[in-house]
Image 1 (cartoon, rainbow, N blue to C red):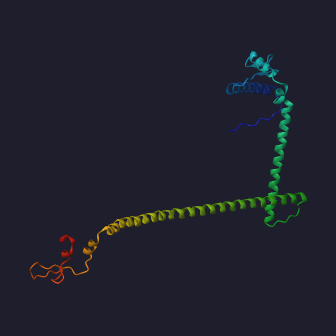
Image 2 (image 1 turned 180 degrees about the vertical axis):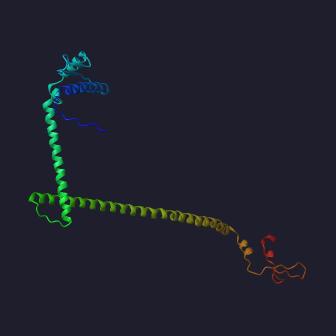
Image 3 (image 1 turned 45 degrees about the vertical axis):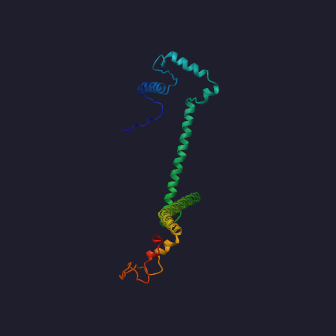
Amino acid sequence: MTRKKVKLAYIANDSTRKATFKKRKRGLIKKISELSTLCDVPACALIYSQYESLPDIWPSPSGVQRVIAQFRNMPEMEQGRKMFNQETFLRQRIVKSHEQLKRLRKENREKEVSRVMFQTLTGRPLQGLNMIDLNDLGWLIDQNVKELGEKIKSKREELLAQSKREELLAQRNEVTMAAPNAAASPARAGDHGMDLNMQQPAMENTMQRPPWFSDVMTPQEPMGSGAAGGDEVLPFGDQNHPAFWHNSPFFH
């Protein structure tokens, strides 16, 4: 349950005023003590009233004298920079109340003109409006059109940025898909290079072989062999064409 806001005005009833004084005095001293303890700042309180012959002092007479001496040692400009009296406090409250009233009047006027604007959209004529009302209505319409234009512009920029992000993501995906193919091509080239390297020693061996080896491996005449001192014909030759083994250097 929220506490009821107290009206800041003089309390006419004596008993009520006295009870309020005692209650608020205890609360004020408690707050000063909490402020001094929590924030480690020097503070004191001197409270005079018509209900007591001696003033209420906090925290002690020596503590009050110490705080007052520290205050008097400050320059005069610093002493009065944040000083408040009853008149200054009331003036600040009045200025604040005027600003709040001005703000509320502006809000109420905008709501009233907005209601008229929406009524005109339903077909209600503008009869009965003076020049001030028409000027306010025109200003409000211009403000709404301006806000709509800014929202449309912001939405377009957002869609354009999203489109660019999607395009960039698509390009990255294409590069990612093309990377394995590019990696496979050098591998195939390396395989061909290995085949060429394997073929190169074979070619070198062929070039280093003697001529008779080629003649033996690729004879120009049908191969055959005749039996020594016999008429038997082998399937590799006949008597008129002796076998290639007799022409080989190994038999000479």
